[in-house]
Image (cartoon, rainbow, N blue to C red):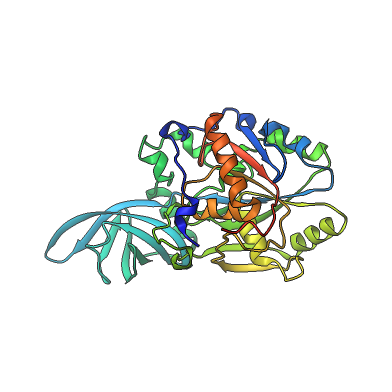
Length: 354
């Protein structure tokens, strides 16, 4: 499928550099294919769903995955190097994106303050594998000490990361460290909104998908078949899978809070739509024509042009529906991307394939 089908013009002024305050004060565009668009507020979400629906939240926690250091090589001057960790491969190893990557080679030593690493593999597109001088919790502690919060480039390129982001860029229910990007749909949920969901008879469940830096990468190929998705590690335990199957059997809908939760649920879905326990990597790439099995509605932010996430929402609600929804959102002043406003999407016809 041609990537340019997912392009659109977005004014710079539409990109949110700070989140709404409080968290649940953002806007919510409700998209039901075949029905008029509805401008609501995030606080209205309990009324937009129904009792018995099961909301699935991604409880990953963002780690300070951006490391700035120096390449050290015998007989050569030190070279400033930045790496973005994106996938843990062993207790002492991370796959990462490096800048500048062209000057790195296997065997190079990198020092990030008190933390040292060796490049043991160099791949395409600036990707490397690092073996650190410590492992497990000791490595986690060192990364927490030496690393910086990895704000998305469309924010970090316009302002510096500050102390507010340490709170703003985590969900209130973040629990399991390992993500290098926030599951941003979840940033809208305050403790008060979660309580309102409970009071409305909605059921909350948690899964974990450690979001990788690949979520920031543009699709550079001309055709979706040529794009490579980077693996992310996810966990859906047996008790949660059983509870979601029971909720759906009783007539409740499964509502994914964020594309990360959706991707994990679809990775865990059996052919009949029921969920099985899941633990491991997923590289699922969803484009129009995909048949959704496990998810009945989606809460998500507004995504980048030509991105895998805009392709996913176009697969879910229909490409023409989402083009119209995004055009409306731009005209109406909705805020886009990680700190932006939200949408509540319902599925469209599978036949909407260019």
